[in-house]
Image (cartoon, rainbow, N blue to C red):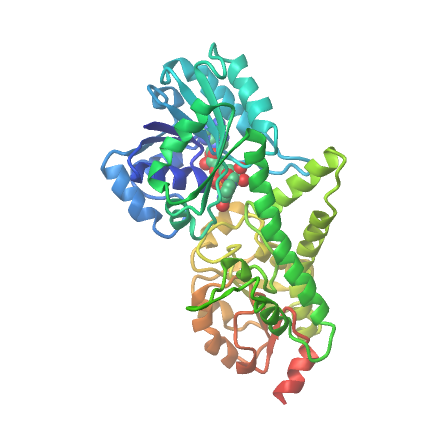
Length: 453
Ligand code: NAD
């Protein structure tokens, strides 16, 4: 099938490369000529494990190409997928990119295959695909929905850091559609993934599935952090031990004859600096405000957001407790990406931590294995000294904060510990007993000192 993907960010590019790899002819369209040039040179504009290899393979075979020219791209295409950004504007999701993409498609629809399905992959609130995208398509073209134009909503569940593996090995494929022909064409697109669970549903249900999934995961994170923050107030309690015991409930980690299964969800049930990235924060805010607009306030989600806003402050408070005052102190922040395996720094907790440190007149030295460039381009005004070498970042620091759980940070922990300065484990992945200067979220500092004596 010939597929056009509009928007080649994390979702668009990974989907494009994945669909090309399973046998489709894919043309990625983006308004950013730099991204298009990189993709055509088989260089990925983003960091994702396995993406470079798959991109090289499919660009060199001709299965995937990129362009800024949608008019050329759509010639003969059976499907166009919209994968543009849907940021939160402080009040609701901002649909400007969706509207523009729908209008762009409508203008060139006469060149597409005789029956063409427009499929929304971006995360949008219920009603958007039908009432915004569908309407724009009909108003700006001579095609009619259900006649020579199909409409589908196919939310994407990939996670950054494991995006390629997630796309190529999906656990579920949700296909919302206005009619059977639209649904069948999108189903055919994913035929090689017949091992996955398919959910065929309405457009609005498909839209809601994505929000409900992300809101659930974010809720688990804030729940763990709320428990952790309470544990910090109690002598002799470490939140990691508490949550570990919670995991052991057989309904969370079932016991099979082969042993106990530890579901991936349990990695969310862990203390930390909070969730970030381009999805959870904006999607939870969007769902909460959507609920308010429908006169169904989402009280749990409001609390999830409040707790999450608190976590960078909790982290900085641990540094302040250790150093007394932050003024004039040099703090090394290790980890800028919102999670390991990605260079995405959108709404990363590290940014809030850095901003709080700077507001308190500390000097910040920052390190990340791959996200320094995206940090510099996303936040050019940030007064941070970047170091590409961990040892340089830590040298002369009065305190060290681990803000991302990068595997290489476990390897440098011994060196960091040898410097005898306070170490704040924002992700609770380091050995608390190995360093008398260790402090972590969900752990009472006084209590730890006592056990170390
Ligand atoms: P992104 O910001 O990384 O990429 C969006 C791309 O769209 C950019 O390259 C931009 O230049 C391009 N674009 C904007 N308007 C365009 C237009 N009219 N024509 C062509 N290109 C255009 O976004 P993303 O992170 O890939 O997210 C895209 C959507 O997918 C969002 O709705 C997001 O919520 C959702 N989503 C994201 C993830 C994730 O992990 N990033 C996971 C699932 C769903």
